Image (cartoon, rainbow, N blue to C red; front, side, top):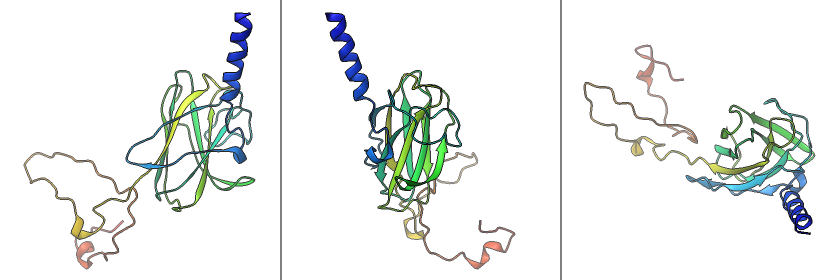
Length: 199
């Protein structure tokens, strides 16, 4: 009797994890800034809803999420459990007329996948499809989050970052222009005087 109850419980747990198997029943994710608020997910018992994306693999266990963009540059991260090889695909449009923006599968089994999308429209809805690269759903479970990349605070000349004092050694610092909307300041006419070109 205990074996039967255990089997029923395991089946119910597995079925409960077969979430958002179709775009129309996609689970909402809320983008954050700075921190990645992971949400548990699973593709157990899911079935294929669209052909495999350009990232490859076998999309026989794809599940769906959606989010409303809070930034023109957005990072989507999937942190898999051991034995899961995540593929991430991002879409614009609506269910039934989706347009693929990007497909990411750089890392193999157990490796985090991150898809960074640029040029998104703030306030627009986007759809995410996640599946295990191999046949079936692997270990089926993972964590997923969406983070908006805020615009740099040094986006104008008067808010420029101060660089460290000049020394004889070269100490590199890492910066990014991800999310920058441009300052609107015209390129000085002297920038091409010595062969430097504005790229």
